[in-house]
Amino acid sequence: MSSFEYDLLVIGSGPAGQRAAIQAAKLRKRVAVIERRASLGGVCINTGTIPSKTLREAVLYFSGYRERNLYGVSHVLKSNVTLDDLLFRTSHVIRHELDVIRHQLMRNRVELLSADAALLDAHTVRLKSLDGVGYRDVRFAHLIIATGTHATRDASIPFDDHTIFTSDDILRLDALPRTLAVVGGGVIGCEYAAIFAALGVRVTIIDKRTRLLSFVDAEIMDSLAYHLRQQRVTLRLGEEVSGLRPIHDERGQRVKIELKSGKQIVAEKALYSIGRTGATESLNLASVGIEPDSRGRIPVNTHFQTSQPHIYAVGDVIGFPSLASTSMEQGRLAACHAFSVEARSVPGLFPYGIYTIPEISMVGRTEEELTDLGIPYEVGKAHYRESARGQITGDNTGLLKLIFHIETRELLGVHILGEGATELIHIGQAVMSYGGRIDYFINTVFNYPTLAECYKTAAFDGINRL
Image (cartoon, rainbow, N blue to C red):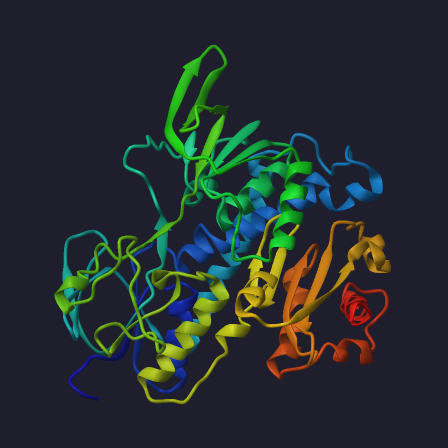
């Protein structure tokens, strides 16, 4: 060993930190993960990805949403679904995932340090005990910052975590509301809006942008907006909030939202979701010359190095796309680069999954991007309702869309809306990874009946357009 106690020190135990630590441990490096929370897993396990997706699945189950096309809109598995019904399943999954993470780190001999971390110099971190009594200084050869993010809060808004709350507070709600206002139409806002709407909650989404999720293919996004409206979701786009405050009257405690246009929205609860801020406030980054942006995000190069080459940053703390899947890959690549191990990835083929109802997934280019680049393309589409599996599952809303080069027929993008979209996307991703053409789907036999057959239907549709 050198004069350093650890070859690699990782701050944060979320997906990025876990993968970085385990990768370095596989290279037989001495590794430690610092976590200041009482439990491992970061936002992903405790308040973000896993809770929200499990909550979504519980809502789909209890509300009978998947069977409504077959049995009617009045079909429900359980009337008067309570928050306890939803959180029971969520708690079970969280406990299981925490156990898996702890076992993986222990199996790979990654040391776990429960403490608050702050940099002292370029190779030293001070660990303060969680009770605030003692501290310990440790030295490292390489450092990976994977502290993640927390919900952005406006100081002028009176958050109480029950009536006016952020996505980090969802699991602490005391009851399901009848009406909900969602301030911010980003991924998190859209996901929770769809989840609550499936339970029959009257939801209003407010966003100052004129279009939701601008990075998603416009046709797919328009379809989602249509389905949200079918669930009685009101979209107030191009509107900016000028005031948000709780009110008390004979109807109880509610929230009043004032818009700059003069409109007013009153709801039982308000979800404030205008983005996330990097959890970097307590790291003392200035001591080593690292400057986060106004949202606490750390700038990095293509190898995830900060302005200090031996200090890396990965995951949500560096900004878009802020997905658990991409964060894991960033952690792996950063650890490999730190120890001069060759590793590569293809960011252009990273899939995106958005767990609205119905869900969305995409990989590759959108029509808008290809138009801006001047690349000639054609599209092929398949609706779930055209497939036997779509009829069996009762999903009449699904759409699979292929985008391919008009001359070479190379597959350039896949965009899916509907049940299983986040699973189906990997078929298109695999074909794109080797530069495959749309003809692959025409010449391939898919199991029947499956939703995967939509690839073949969409390919024929695209070829016919030529």
